[in-house]
Amino acid sequence: MKENKRGFEVIKAYQDKSIRLPQRQTNYSAGYDLEAAETVVLPSFWKQSVYYLLHNTFLKMNDQISKKPEDLWQATLVPTGLKAYMMEDEYLKIVNRSSGSYKHQTALPNGIGIIDQDYYNNKKNEGHIYVQLINYGLRDRTIQKGERIAQGIFSKFLLVEDDQVVNHERKGGFGSSD
Image (cartoon, rainbow, N blue to C red):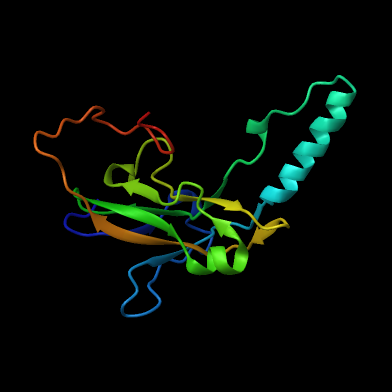
């Protein structure tokens, strides 16, 4: 990692996939636009809900085992092919683009994503940044490779007096510190 700097790098698995590093769109943009590294289909929440309702109603009428709710409505992890490095008192905030919800009916189910400084180059996945998205539109949505899907904003954070760290080493991402 580079001292006193912050930025993005392409992870090894995507080196030959023509991944563009994030850029700000204007002089006063706070966020760096993150793009999809692959074409991904986001299933429609409503389509899955209707399927679940009809599927379970029919199966229950025939005394068959029905699908579990946790099998549906999962967020889709969209790969970016990127990792981010930053100073020790910083994190990268992943936020929805305004066009995501307004034009495309997509949202980050967790509201915002947090990429911690120690996620960079972790052993499990090299710090690969994925964007969690749900599609609350009526139809499945295909996100094309290179499409801007979220924004990354570098931010500082503060510590409380007598800060105590529980886990000293990151093991991966998406709940790795649970």
